[in-house]
Image (cartoon, rainbow, N blue to C red):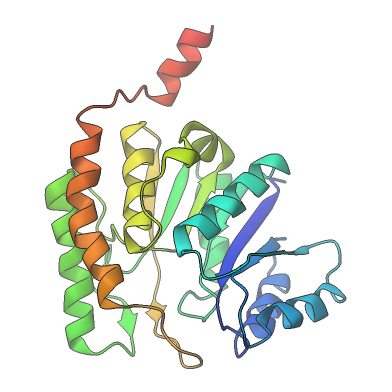
Length: 252
């Protein structure tokens, strides 16, 4: 059975973190969990340490000095997962906007369906978003359309943050060369995986807005994504992407 790791970046998620960990640990597929906490002043890390007493072999914590950005938290987690030789690596929010049960769908797509990367998609089958105001739904939906238009990616939910990677995808992408740390990070990772020719699928999920804690979304994050998409596309024009199968052929 493939070894699976769920990476959860946190900043002030004390209201959610213990419950989300319990939910993941009770799933029919075994997932380990790595929490990357950015020195949350609400004692999120202390709650994770308490949970580690319940799950000593499956729950891990990395603490950072401050709020350093979503992208750098995931990159730390990706490198940790590669070092520990996990086969499947997942991105997931702590606030229950991503249903823990949907981890199994993403797992099945990569472990059983043969895909290299699975995207938990809000828009691949209509609009599956709960508790968002209509203006935010429209902004998110048309942001994905904008990303597809600029980059050429075919994905309906180009900004999704709920994903599964096979380890080889993360080993192929140069994680030290990722440009963005906020919202655009999610776009950049999909774009690079797509440009390298990995087999990617969108798996339909229902996204539910958080009911506890405070959203981390801001106008600055949205602006980074808006302008970052153009930079991602321009940077790709000066870079050579060798598909994974071609890399293997050259190695032989």
